[in-house]
Length: 32
Image (cartoon, rainbow, N blue to C red):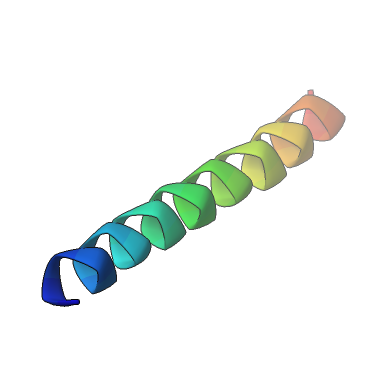
């Protein structure tokens, strides 16, 4: 149970970082 929660948090953080990267990447492309 504990290891499963750690894996879920890791996947969630990875997805959040990916979403933020895509969001700021699109903003930078629009600025250029």
